[in-house]
Figure 1 (tube, rainbow, N blue to C red):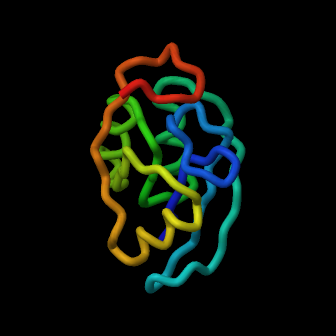
Figure 2 (spheres, helix red, strand yellow):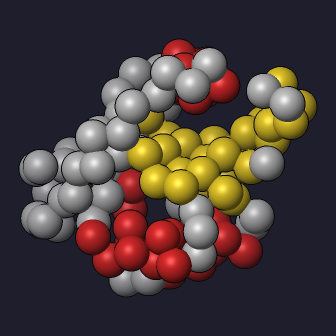
Length: 118
């Protein structure tokens, strides 16, 4: 299974669409079998959820995300975690240990530059 984390440096990005890229973890039986970084190809309405779906992602983790992206992920059966903070390593470990909590935060403002105004 592929798990994508919206990434800024070594941290979960504050906003999905404006992150520098996505760290995609290959996980099987709660074991990480691989990790790769995909540069964000650009923020356009509806594009990123379809892009990540095409990469085979089944879980997306971010600090915040707009309602349109959440809706598309839900339609594609991709589990969404929002309101997440911390390092990538802490976050993936919490996910693997069933300890990751989603606040179901939806961003409504998009004039920010990299920070979610939930």
